[in-house]
Length: 384
Image 1: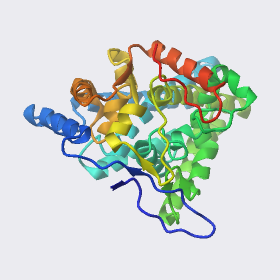
Image 2: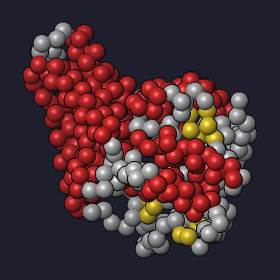
Image 3: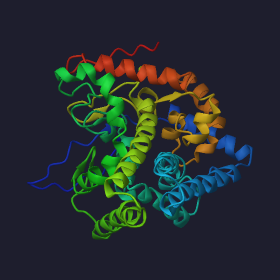
């Protein structure tokens, strides 16, 4: 059997979740077949799986835009209203750094050079988040236990949002399709001020158990948080000729746009009509190989929309990303048809929504249905 996690050391104070065991791989199974076909594509076309020149160019202009908007904000050369506009632009550039640059780098898919990936991944800390926490909660937990209740931290949100079937149903959830989008806008602000600290010192992060917290990472957490607060709050308050509360207002406005952008992109990939929420058995068994699980829990959207694909790190090709997280996102459009055909050959679903706003509508319907569906009952897998 393939173990999803290593067996953790238990203690009286911290008892880990039962480890998840996926169904055994077979040589004629989907995972082996899709890996072989995609590898053949890169080999036969003599293409690297890492970033190409277009990706490098995109990285440069995103970083320039991010630095330029910040520089103009603190320069004192623009009006207060202009500063607000620049703050919103800065928030959007920050989201693009996270979705395009840091995301690939932390996965190790930007380049084959681990040191360069690490350096580029540090840009995540300049969004106010923490790369170490993200590496565990996203790379390890979310990618391993996608949509598995109590194991995938991405569907374990504050209880006012009901995103999984075994969560208690509250009366307020019937309105979550209305207020959810405002809560999404708080995503990165939550990372900056609360969630990273909370997650860092949790022994159980979704399906992953940690007995200890590395001292080096504790130092890095507080160092980069202090650096972020200094650059984006203290310095503007000191150098901009406005009352401090207007600076804080601009800071929050920047994060509202940044958080909304990041959260919505990730929600459309898993919390949408057609996706499933597999429950492990009492023994922790999931009756699917890992790659097959991804096909039941992950969705693509707007894959023909070049603007969406370019700006948001190819994460509208979420199926390809989950199956091949070590492949730079610039290659997803080229391998998507290979993955789709292989899924068809193995009689597996390939969930996709044609347009961005169609995916938004589907996610909204999903939230509305989950807002009234009793605990333990799955939302019907019916795609419109």
